[in-house]
Length: 141
Length: 285
Image (cartoon, rainbow over all chains, first blue to last red):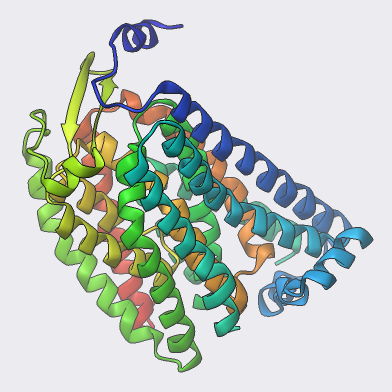
């Protein structure tokens, strides 16, 4: 622990600050989700480069491989078959899901610490995000 | 360009974008998006989709770091997301329809003009002393307990703050979400303004909380853009990986910086962003 960190520890939180555990949990959720998402994206990108190194970038820009895997069944079969594009799509979904899971964690944290108003407000935020994922998104497809 | 070169260059672009995005609270897309269009020749819809992936990577990376440093205010972030998420959904949906109607150029010029109009205010605030006295909370702020504190390493003291003016902040938050969803940028320009100017939070808390919120806003926008076919993972993945590395570096630098230093990083990035989007809207860039 350096001098600055020691000083921060010695300075007690102000009344009303959320407990240290809430910050730790939230940081862990974001950190874990990010590691999973980036591992998927990095692995799939590396596989794509190794398997198709000399394909021109223009083709990849013009033809979006994610469109092939919007159907969950095709995505699942692509993942099982080891298609890098399917794994890339899974990485994109993991990246999008990370902040959504963070919101869900927030609900649990606020309920546990007796902050009902904040818990209700966070439920509304989660509901709005889910409306985007499962209602608005499919409507514009 | 070969796929190998393409991926490497996108990764380097992502590193630079993540660094700037995390230090300013703007999100890495403000740098990445114009570079994709101008240097890589990526069409605007795919650039916007990739921009949202960089936004997500930046927010989760810096969000985790800032949360552990207690710089992000979790209550205030959640509170403003009530406004930013519907804004993002509406903005992304509007983009889908406008792009399909070939009407995106005029909106790019309008966005650039709005950003340039914000610059004088940002410079003036840079000359003012940093907020040190806690603002008087309004009724909504008091009801939801929108207050907190953080330990300022440079000043070596604990800074206590309260949120004020919550209603106008929600309005700006909605605009921030709309802009984020529409253009695939983090909308941090507006979020930082809502948090600092209206809620009267210290700059570091405003920047960190903005980064924290940007992820949820980005997820809402991305959910629409993925379905519309605007998110291309071959472009977005290397960019997001680079952005995460740059954002992590930036989040470690932020606690040691003076508040004014962060402000002066903030202002030129707005100018560059504004000029880029105007040139793109006019078909010059």
